[in-house]
Image 1: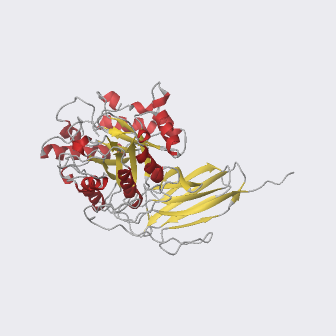
Image 2: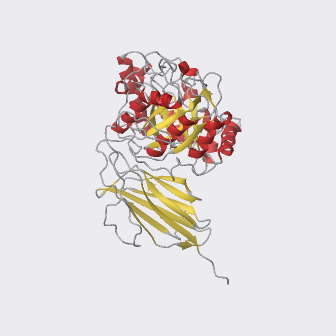
Image 3: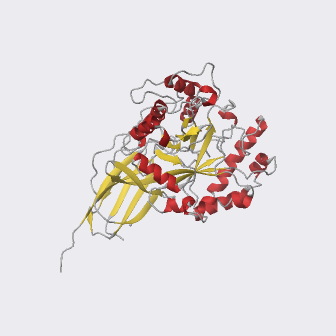
Length: 494
């Protein structure tokens, strides 16, 4: 949307994860091809209090926020994102993210500040801005945001941002080359574990994705900003919500084609910006208080490989609308993304490749173009593991625990090793999650070293059920998990 936005050894745990396929040779992309985390994010005009209010509205603590660092006018400001500090506590997003385990940011980041050399695409690709990129990455790492999702040069197929892909095939190629170079430079900064999202605007300018796609080795997530309207409105405008959704899916270089493109490239999908539009806007295709649209977005999230989605929660006189003021859509959002929502990770199940769309909430869906490849099937994990035994079946995860009860306040080391075909997997992420009620909440993300090992030390505060979740990598199996339970041991008096 083109709007300017301002735990030592009381217990040891070792889990061995054995994906069925080896990592893709020569591929360095950080995110898993089946990173089906289905994280729910929200944009609240950079207001922390607004996010808290929205959390209360839907009855669930929102732990992911979409923010923007895309209006800097010079390299100094560009390389020192405002979200890292400031005097107003309502916009100190780095502090918000660090204040509670499991919180994360999706940072929308421009490729350059505004108003620089018009030949910036080619200059960037040649390495002219490398030090600025290093400074930017180091600042985020120092601010505790080194594992954020970065929406780099978002909506570049549009013509409203300075860092767009330009207007010629040469511009497109230079833009893609700079995007790829940017990622390579940023990844080399110590402590940087960013996930890079290549996000397009739905159906705008109808420029083929291949002409400005930076490459599978640098793109981690493929995303699309899709509001409840059609970029090029048909005449007459769709008369029903179902017809409007069919038009959204069928649009040239739009949602349906982008979903198929993500599957073809083995990447998870994202919907970084989605939301309502004023009834009759967008050439008469805006849906207003459209619960059907919310159902269909939730259906994609629930039934496909989706890294995250970001609701645009903001009223604007000409385009998006907040759920807070649209009761029908709000009710559907609560059903799908509120507490115990059916599109949250613990409830949702991936059953289709990213190139198709089915039904949601009993509504008849419209099928998008067929996916280029079907998703891999997740193996069935054994129901238990013998302590100290070596796993013999290649089922995904086997784990063992040397003790199950510890004294409250003692520290616990949790370790994990990742291998594929007997070889260690380095640089891979494993999520440590805790069961809260009926929902798994992320506690910490671990990353494997060159030997495939990762570990963390935590203080035991009570009996709880945890799990380790490995999301896989390119050409590997979908997400696999192994749960375990830690109990408290009583201390004898005297």
